[in-house]
Length: 335
Image: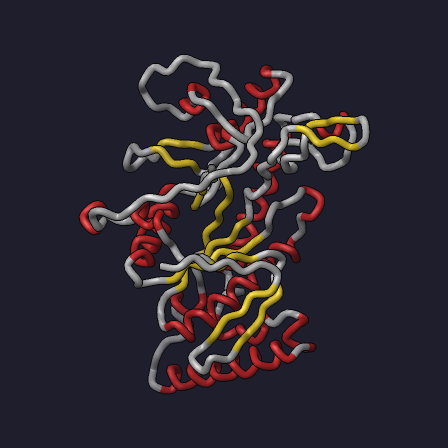
């Protein structure tokens, strides 16, 4: 139940205590800690567990609630509360039109997929699984391409395979992608010389260039972000279930570092061990073309910062009647 974070270089130990380093765009390796009970069935939650909280040194001025609280929850109930790290839009009509546009779009993920992730996380909370999360600090519109998505997916597959082999337990694979656009800021404005402009809060809100036009908070960036997320998820689903994730192809997952570094040489040795194990399983009659060998569950996650976007993608499940934020499989909220 420890929490472990890795950034540019990730070190993983296998049974022989061999260190393998993977250079990723930006990756995190997490084990669930005090938030574990959020995914655990009520009957399994232990009593008396303490609670923790984090303090933020500096925060932007909170957004003041603009609607009275009726006491009944709805997807827009957040507007009746005090919000932090929220952009201030100068045209509410544009905001309403962007939300209406998103509300008419298809959900990015589905309730059944979210429930599957909840079940796997509950098992991890009780030592029956391991959570691996990796991806970008923040996605950008101008950096999107298929190769970038594929390489991020491939690195997570490689790390998950090492962890599964060394830890002898299932690994839950979560990509911090297809929605990780918004960025929290300690100050609402950025000052350069005598010029003060709104802080850059991620492409889903405004642009990075230091000009009044670029730094204007544009509600329709949410629509652009949605369409990029849809493309990213389409690519990830194709890779996860279309044969690319087949464990027999692990040698084909090799990135450039595998060919040119000492760590890559160690990975090749590890891959050879897995190949040998697969050949043995085939020899004794195990069907390695089964979905357990050729497909993977891959989930997406992002920080829940831009609440108008989350509101527009919150839908009621037709089978259970429960509400789900269908912008990602996993959302987290910072303080």
